[in-house]
Length: 395
Ligand SMILES: Cc1cc2nc3c(=O)[nH]c(=O)nc-3n(C[C@H](O)[C@H](O)[C@H](O)COP(=O)(O)OP(=O)(O)OC[C@H]3O[C@@H](n4cnc5c(N)ncnc54)[C@H](O)[C@@H]3O)c2cc1C
Image 1 (cartoon, rainbow, N blue to C red):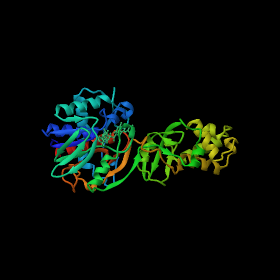
Image 2: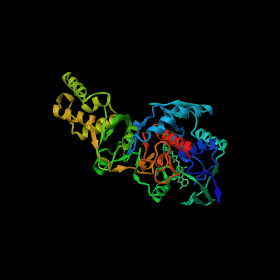
Image 3: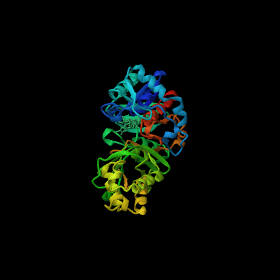
Image 4: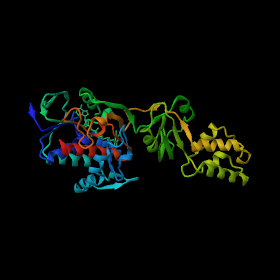
């Protein structure tokens, strides 16, 4: 049995941040990872360029049963702190949009930086190492495929359930349950919506159509692009809204975010009074993609008569449909594609300052396994860095 000060399980974003911080403080750290390579999720993140933080990250960009929990960690390790680290390693980056920072070249640079930081902090790493059991005597004992390790502190950084092919497991939740900690129900999030049967029929053949829109669900609204797929609705605005969606909830889409309902109706009225001979779908195609214009005219039974001959009721119904297209998704696609897992270890069980369990001293949970889930756009990595940093100061 080898004795360390801290065992960290999971060498992802949060685990490596925690290990390097604690290592710098002179703690003897063992970092256990069941995959044979480090940072699989980091490597594919941000389309291979890792959207490693967001300049605007604040508690309002996170969903949790306790929205204030993330405040302390986020304020003590900020986007600027991570940017300073990235700069010190000479990694070139740029802001893409909405405060989202991406590497100019490759996400691998972030992984290499974290691995180097762990090495210089004296962290011992074990890859391909499966943890069979965790027990607690006066120390935590992790029995693994590469031997047994004991330490007074154990940090669980095994992430959520999203993307099993990148190494995701339910290990963190199992450990939480084993030690009697509550879990907020988990669900795939930042995921595309799947249409119910009747909507799938209505919107068949539109896969690939993309446009700006506002997608709203349960009081949260996101103005970004949407993308129709073979099975439903994707694109950043839809993924963001999925974070707030619960089974049975309705999703609202505004397909003409740059105009109001009244202005849209006025526009049609003006065209009408000018005696336009054009069909509505032709006029509408000036403002939304043609396939959307055609499909919404069909769905609202707008006839092929010229605009001048359309009834005011038909035009009003069409405008309403475009400004507030509503559907109740059957589901989201699921963990196979979801970027994150909503829910997780109940934050009421943890100290917001250190991430340590109130019930089990020495046991810490950080990163995505905790019930703190960020918006799309670098917020989830910022939570991983901030929660990892907080635990790294305490273990
Ligand atoms: C396709 C995709 C793209 C994304 N892009 C972004 C982005 O650009 N920006 C952003 O902010 N967020 C992004 N995310 C979300 C982000 O990757 C996660 O929120 C973040 O990685 C969570 O960090 P973590 O350290 O908690 O977990 P992870 O990074 O998932 O790390 C967990 C680690 O634990 C290991 N592990 C799991 N089970 C065990 C076990 N039983 N024993 C040992 N080790 C184990 C895993 O192999 C993994 O290495 C993306 C997610 C996906 C799926």
